Length: 130
Image (cartoon, rainbow, N blue to C red; front, top):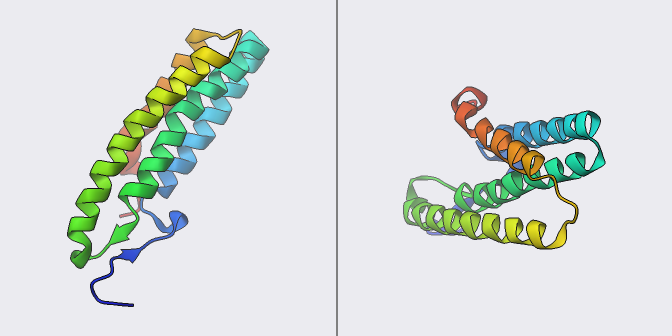
């Protein structure tokens, strides 16, 4: 490996991997709770909301945390900006696709599971090992 080539990390070795796993578990549990409590429409609406929160976070983690090492500082900064921009665009596109293509839709379940899945990020310091 060339000394100027940044070292890339696989997804399961990223420091944010436990957060992504917890987010996935939270969205699945909340979608199942919506399905059980309010019915099928709320269940798949909650699942869509959770996936709208989780998929852009997965993209951001892949883009932003794939480099490590002091020599990769510029690549890390560039990938953080690209990851955040992509995350925002992907979130908007997913919301547009769900609102345009999923009928009937329970908006309360969609936004509720979306927000609760995003709240996992608040507990990130507790979930990270380093």
